[in-house]
Length: 113
Length: 115
Image 1 (cartoon, rainbow over the protein chains, first blue to last red):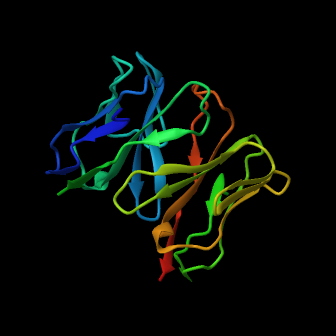
Image 2: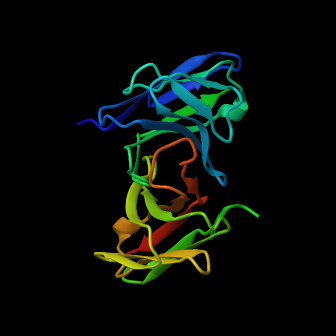
Image 3: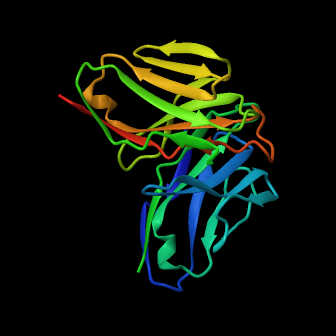
């Protein structure tokens, strides 16, 4: 099992460009989420999904869109990249009844110039 | 007041030292408590998970929860250079993965164990 995979590993964007960060899991987990991690700020929840077709906002959703058409995939879209979105992005999944047993992907390092 | 507060660090200790990492929280509804370890340029990985007050031991690691004081700790005995990482505490109100089940994380503390 690959667990949680994220692509790309690194990305550099210019201000105003759009892109999609990919996240896929093969653990059949219902709950998927996106975080960004910045120095001194910790992990902040961007969006999450409790199942296919259901998404909701976290603490810092502005500038990001998500969709969940399948159990396996949960892409994060940056609509118009801004330097403030320079960060490391992590996708995570949890199974039903798993509580805090959340599995993180390896991360995508994004730089917006 | 933030829901979860974690000592900011960084923390540097000699090999073999006992390390104590701490978090306090304000939401009495938190019932499940976790410690995640994150190596440099990697994703966080679950290290310890507990839902009751008291101690839980796993090898050199002990997680302690005091719900009455809203305080959790992670102790590392005989610390090794391989323990050098960022440690994040996390907590949630429910074991179920519904709409209100998000994890609330501390900001993390970076530990360096010197050989």
